[in-house]
Length: 267
Length: 283
Image 1 (cartoon, rainbow over the protein chains, first blue to last red):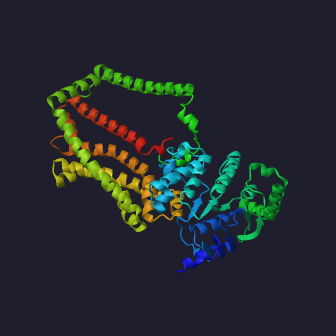
Image 2: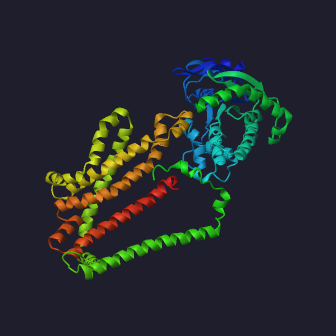
Image 3: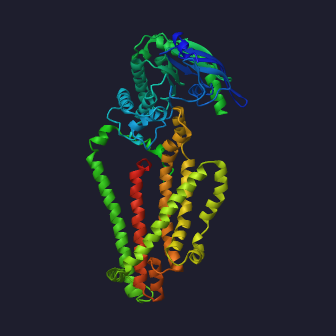
């Protein structure tokens, strides 16, 4: 109604207030409050069962919240839509579609495809390093390349925010490092707002401006850590003392929870 | 065959260099030799089997009233062909098969779609479809002939009754087993139910539908022949029963051989079509 007015006032990119989620008796998330500014790279880390993926899915609109609300550019979010790009842990590529046709499917669904969209998608594929692979099928690609398509597909709808759910978890260690550096390169080009969920502390520290540490039972925001490492960052930064002390600090925050989660899962 | 979908092929990754620059020649050479070996064994097996058949029919059974050898069958086919009888029989059977198969395919896919459209619909249709699929409906062929006459329509009905159910069952199974991950991926972009159906469920059901249609080829051929045996004026089944009555073994076998060839050719053609239409299901 007063959207014009809101444009003038500076609205955070994403506002989460008092967000809660229950699955039956289980308190998956409780009282999450958070604001993300435009262009920020935010990571969520925490032990398994801390609700970090549920949190991301609620923001995507794939899962309803039990309480609280999520505002994207000041508008409440309830359903999935083309203003959020979701990058899945498993690549979820359609096996009968080529790389290009997979990358453009979000556009097909949300706004239709014309020459401009095709050109943009082509440029994005180039950006993620898949130039020349447009006509390949997913089964012809390596795991790292499939995740590049996954990323390009989310970027192709030109979303307001990129939601990434442990996108590199299934990759081997070397490929994962390369993909982290690639993601930073791509992010620095477009300055998209990113919310990145991972269980890897070093990955989160390397990528983020801010890091949200989640605790479990109930899933809640335990601490927020600002990562003041200079940008642009290269993989070398992982060997600096500052980086190591940051990852140590975060590990100590979640250590007890991780042990408890491991015990619980083994029981 | 159907369950081996995308997940398995994930492991077989290939870089573009090895794809475009033509892979290692020694390994492709080895594959060729292996292929030749496989075909060699198949060829030897078929030739050997035919030779054995010829020998048995000439020297062991040696009674033209019981068995015809391959050579006699070829001669019989040749004679039937030049008199034009063969083409008449083939034409009638082919028309019966084609009509029944096309109608059954359309009906079966529609039935499968209906079953996949909702739980109530499925509950209502499932007992009939599963029950009739398990029933040897071919036993109803005499009844269909009584109802629809001795012409081609009674055979068309028999073919439909045999082909429609596997197609329906496979279509429903294909739609039902659509990957939840893929549906969720499309949903994350704000896709409507209709878009999810058209862009994910239907394409991922295609391999299943094709498998059902392939299964239908053999069943349809059986339907044509058996229905013709029960009562017809022409067709390969008619040729077989006529020849049996006259103890004309070469012509009886001629009919059987032509049916076998038709089945093999159609199934092989269908497999090629599958390779073209759903290449992602291959290993």
